[in-house]
Length: 348
Image (tube, rainbow, N blue to C red; front, side, top):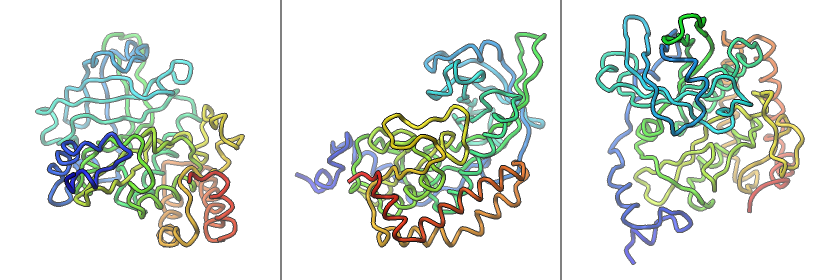
């Protein structure tokens, strides 16, 4: 058996040597720079013009792309729209389904969307309702927090979006909060890597430093809506370190700190509210987590500054998030409390 095959991830569907070699051959020689959209944190306004009534009634993620236009400043870009997601795509959950935006390759040249092909747009579930509008900045800021901990994290860009219905003149425009999430391939390229499928990954497949960071972060924000084995709300990156997988989380609307109305723990979990923290990763000792805990401690002031200085949240929401994080810091800096929390629900 070749060394390529012997080092492949035996527990994954990646184990075929040809697939592993193909992924390895495509690994960038050096980290790529962020694409223009994600080089700034400034909030900007844009308009998406399309048959919005038809879009809101479309819940099939396999439906054809709906034609539209994205307008920002002096730039007008041809786009396609399609609903995405799972739970939030249901009409019983959201009046406005999550958006996938496909860009015209020629149209993005020279604009803030240069180099983009397709992006997730996280938009308000029920536009105009104050509680649902507030969920968007709460979730967005979690991406900024995790960016402080590790480069193996998705970038995000906050926008104010107006949906203008081009097919129904009697329908008023909808203006709401939203943010774009970095393309998975671009995130991997920033880390000199490529995205790979990794359903069924085991602990030994992962880069242990990045795994520790992710595990602490999900515990910090109170998120139980992820699965390594099912590749649910986590993506995987391979770099030149062949045989090592770097896990990268996303989609935090079910976390305790965001605390959406619709978020409820899975019935199989030993918690009654998403506000209750539960360790959703592999088993660690405090000693194994010590380097990661040091990184979180080192960034605590910077995390506090995000919430103290933001104009996106009301002060009461910012204070509530910091109070929720304070409990996390109490736990991780007490080995006895941390051990108890991990052993309550860790995986082998």
